[in-house]
Length: 64
Image 1 (spheres, one colour):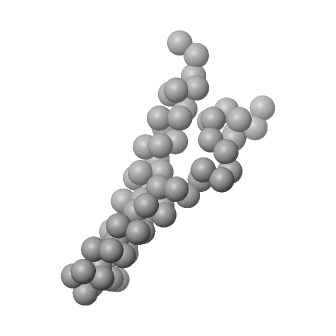
Image 2: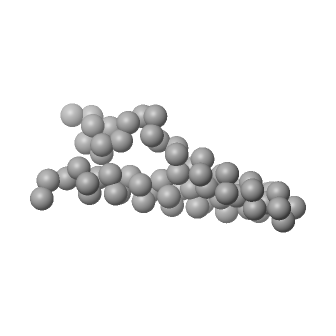
């Protein structure tokens, strides 16, 4: 069984958290006129969201 099948996430679902974080970072960055800082914060936030989503998917698919 591949890693994708074990984790329960498909290839198209990967990167959703990163896109959400980057969108938030760009929105705040354009509002505050400091896109460089907020884009970096958004990427970090997106990585955290992505990690949380993958851990949640792993715990949902594991047998009790």
